[in-house]
Length: 263
Image (cartoon, rainbow, N blue to C red):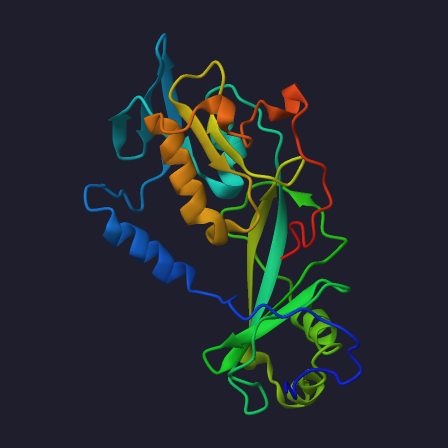
């Protein structure tokens, strides 16, 4: 029933209720729903002040913000923010890339997200074209980046990978020009067990973590609610399995979950 798949495929899994969404639109939705929040755009955080009671202020390039609660949700810069309060987080960053292919008549508009778990590639329709990604097993850990750049040869490798399950891509490649391809890059953040770090930090009152989860926006709503419950007391710190202290307590989960941090 799916002509864009390789007929030699022996088995696969399909989740009819899965889908995708726009990270930009989700972010705007969060902002609109936060009627009493104040947003500081184009504002760089420079540091965090503490006193005998814990967190006391955030320093920015537009001034000082007095507060007794700070959430470290800085993505690849979470490790930097942690150091502002003398905390070395056990996390690291890795570059991840994807390529947008301009609209082409052979790209199906109604296909689901197609993932190849053998070579760690994926593709899905996007505004008449498609978004493609591939996990490079030779990618190294990297420092936090303000403006990560994609590799010029990433599209060629990725198109070859996705063609294994969807052979029509070999025909699309024959028509592609350089201006039909756009490469984007970002950083995934990993903890030792590839689970998020969420919750308060022992010894630093008012400092909370909400970081180190590679799915990013896919976990944002649940992680935000989880963090709020810990701040407001609806959840007790000892009932939070994602607390930073789990590594010292021997409660970290074994690594190796299916699709762990690949996409």
